[in-house]
Image 1 (cartoon, rainbow, N blue to C red):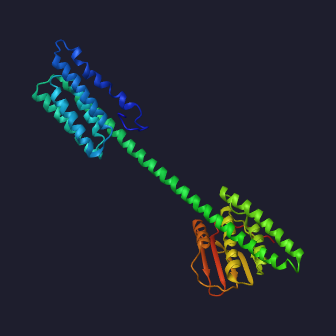
Image 2 (image 1 turned 180 degrees about the vertical axis):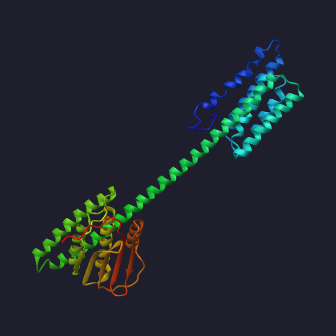
Image 3 (image 1 turned 30 degrees about the vertical axis):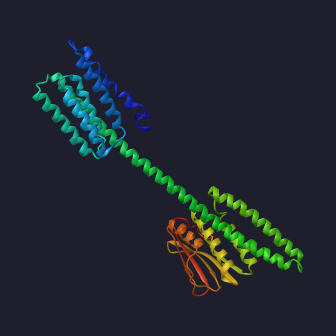
Length: 363
């Protein structure tokens, strides 16, 4: 059994605060003419005080009200017989901080002060019996209210920290899922095409078939490297490498590629996203477009630059799949836009803010 709930912030301090109970317990020994009744009241009151004190750490809000009231009642009854019974009022004020809000806590402490003052007046108590009680009720109550407020703020910070950590994990999982989709979707499509081509060439052109199979092996090894890099957070080999990969994939699908790429100095984040967008668009062309020609262009525009991937395939306005949706999210996160027009073939247009990224075209 635990006397107080497990709480790293509380630690051992609640046990330390019981030191004030000792003054009440031993008060008959300090009196000149203590009677057995005084000892009974002292020992019985100590047991009641400790029971209420430790119970108070297990409850909050309205549930703490009976604890506060019982402590104040014991103090009210015993104070005229034992000046040290003022500790009941002090502990009562300390627990007032565990009420629902600071206003309720301050009001409760004020009521305790009034009760002590009225009893001191009606019972004609010596100032030594009640003066220190008024001081410590206000002081302990104010300190506890402050630390309860700090504790609530820290709890909110911990909650916010946990939420941020959760969102970061979710975002990382989504990033890995998008990257693996982009990497494996493209690579597996190329492997399938090259494997089919090698199968068709196996009898009439064995040398070409062996070449295609070697390409399949190379692409598979590259894919493994890229998957490992994606998990670590390094996604793209760069725009030029992606264009070469696109050319290989389209060539395997018998799609002629035309590139018109301006020599622009792009921010690394922009280049990585553009490279992945080209990969996704080319993968869709290989899988679904039934195209014969494809054109990829990168050109500056007023205050921006645009990437267009155009094919002469069957087009259409099918809903965005997970690949294009992920691309659009990445691009929009960098302030750009992604649109698709399927009226004549398919045209994917990506527009990104230019910022200060363009270098002049070389002669």
